[in-house]
Structure formats: structure tokens, C-alpha cells
Image (cartoon, rainbow, N blue to C red; front, side, top):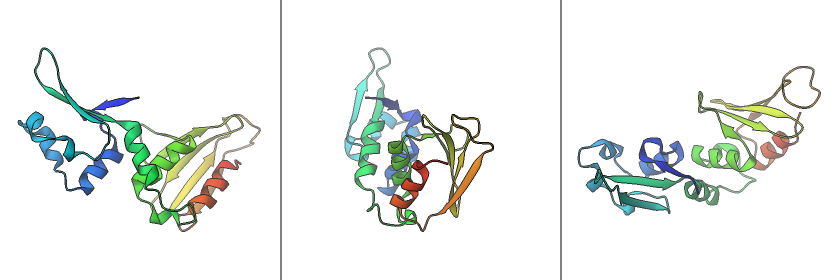
Length: 163
């Protein structure tokens, strides 16, 4: 199981923290190690431990536990994508095999044996660009646009159907 230090808590978990009125500034306060408790965090795999030499506590949160929580809270697959929270959409994309860009948090990539694609979460629509540079025999990049009013199931079927 992959764990993250507090300096790299995923946006998904931070959003959940914010939604529970957790004050993120307390993570950076001088009293940080003593200002938090397991009840402060929604992630199911929470622990603090003391380091041997520095006597400081380090917060460790399981990335997979947080993603599993968001997947469990996904609305019905027949509901429009606009009814899904951003953390739920992100967990869903990860479940499909997408990975998030380090440069732009709204851009995701997927590499299938027959094709590679770049997905962009725009303000009004979801864009997927099937890349000519990937496997397959595309003459040029091919882009499709999907409204967030479409169901998650319809978007998933269209995206995974390939170019």
C-alpha cells in the first residue's frame, strides 16, 4: 500500500478535509503534531508515529484508502457526470486506468495496447484526444468532446471504445 507524507496529500483527500471544516492551516502551525487527531481525517488508514531522532510526528495517509472511499460514494452510473464531485471523477478516471498530469491537474492520460489518449476536464465539457503518436494507425490526432450532461456510463463506453 502506498502512503503519502503530509506535504503531498492528494487533492482528493484535501477536498474531503475541507468539506469537514478541517482547518488546513493547522497543518503548518507550530503546534502541528499536537493539533491533529485521527478524528480530524476522513481517510480510513490514518496513523501518526514518532521518529526516533527528531521526536516529531509524521502524518501518513493511504492514497488507495481515500480513492476507495470516493469510488464508494460515486453516484449511479446513469446519472450525468455534472452530478459527480471532482474527487469522485478523479477516482473514477484512476479506476479506468488514467493517470494525472504533473503539469496540469485537469489533464489525464491513458495508454491502452491499441491507443493512447489525453483527457482534459474543461469547464463546460470533457475532451479526449486520441494520439497519433500512440499505437494504432491514426493518420492524425482525433478529438472528441462530451458534455457533462451525459451519463458517466455513456462517457465511459465512448472513451474506452477508442478512436
